[in-house]
Image 1 (spheres, one colour):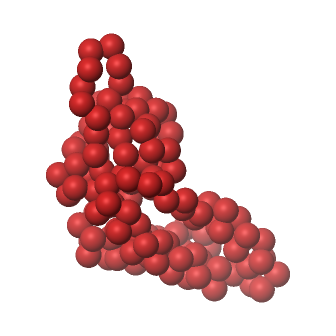
Image 2: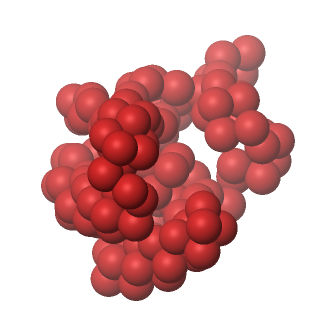
Length: 132
């Protein structure tokens, strides 16, 4: 049941994100940068459990879309990423998509299980917004 619900929700979420010009990797990275303004490439890679090299394409796309900014390169210091004003404006749209996903998932479970699932999902989908 979890797999079926997950696939259905993933398709809906991808449709919503496509309207924003983002994919799932982009949204997860953007939300993580919003949680931790000034996060380094290595820190972001650790948080997303990928290599720093793998995060390069994602951050490059977010920079091109003007959703994040990066600090200037200074030898010996890590590059830092922060959410831009445009990124902050996109986050509510993503939140709407995530909340829709949350409701969709919860609606697929029996009432007794739905309460536990709803609480868990709420904690997972909380998205604090950092300032640009």
